[in-house]
Length: 463
Image (cartoon, rainbow, N blue to C red; front, side):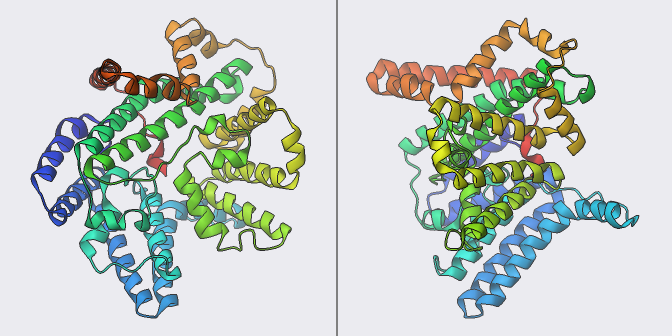
């Protein structure tokens, strides 16, 4: 079940909220949240919901083993289980395919279905046991609270990655006041509109180009496709984050922010401080620091960064494309660390241009189906092949495309929020009314789109 589905918006969410707010005690609300979260996950994943519950059970008791003094054993149980299910469901077929190619075996793929959100909930539970191991938090004695943390549907399938340290106290005590409900509703509606009205529009264009045979597309088609995908993935992912944070606020939870206008970054290091921040900080705290972080020699720092970005790529998917995507970012970050004065002397506009160019080229490997296809696509972007621009001409004469591409670029910056929407809420009662009227209009358009459109892709199904 997805936030932007008819079932979720018209049935699941209203029924859940009605029952949730009828309950007055926090513990009762946690029980309701857990039950509905399991229904939410089982709606599409069916029996795989057992895997989600098993993850909660294993890490709950692993943390108790750590607390009772057998620290290495408890941590080993948690890591073995979580990395084990990740490997089995996400990487086993990839491993088999590469082994067949390298040593000539003929083992058939198992075609294992990937449980949605597995990368998110395994990282959350691992962060919990690692934090207990490091003494940053105490092991929970309340399985209901812990299971609610692991399974809660607002951030279950696409993040943000929430650490127990962030919301442990909120599981015991939180306030669903009107201010939070109002802010949460606003955030959810903005996310819903971003997903349905913007991300899905650019998804159509990106899929048009990337589903065409790459050898026949032109220079302009190639740039059209990857720019559309660059906007699609940003609005798709930030939309789900907005909806997750909004739902959390309605329920009284404060989830961490996950994006901060990454496309305005002037370095790749800066990009990763703004893009999918909860994942970036997870790898920093639990992989990079564990490898020694900055407290080692310069060459070891570079090796640590190399490892982190290889793992980051693999976290997104079992494909060499994702490894290359991670390596591009890692290599550029190593270069930025190696020659800081050189990058600082570059004019700011050039810093931004180089950063966005690296990001866009890397997205090709993220989106393309195979590594040869990605390499050919990048070649097309710089070949100046002026064959018939089937897609480019089709969209160039479309007035909606011109409006959407301008709107997309503008909304990737804080300009609209800082200069228009935020001041509008503060100037007067009339301004607040206009802002809420705008939100209602966006909601109405979203529902109209949902009722009439059949194309509604979800990028993070494969993660």
